[in-house]
Image 1 (cartoon, rainbow, N blue to C red):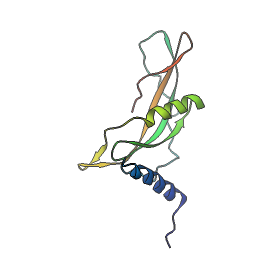
Image 2: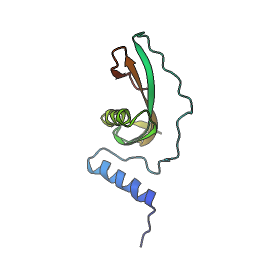
Image 3: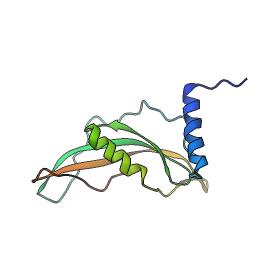
Image 4: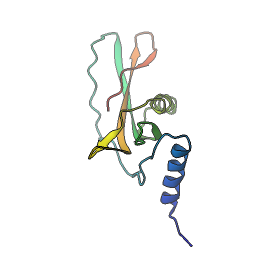
Length: 129
């Protein structure tokens, strides 16, 4: 009988979902202990009508075919903005990472910056990888 740890079962379940949809292999064994830098650098934005609100940092698992397998919020602003950032990132498609000429699954930190306008509208800029 084969014994699997909870982490191994979760990684297998994620990989099975990606493979079932032919989105490739997802990275396994992601560390949920990863933390974002304590002090986020305030992004430079040239529009004087916008004020920096904050950054949502996501741990993003990317398959060997460039599809987003999963996201996890590492640095939060609010539940609403965290959800918007996760929803947007899950729709992206990345150029697959390569090692020795072969595509490989990868985990990266993705930052989504938010700004407020003079009218109070919340907007985001282009995320930084």
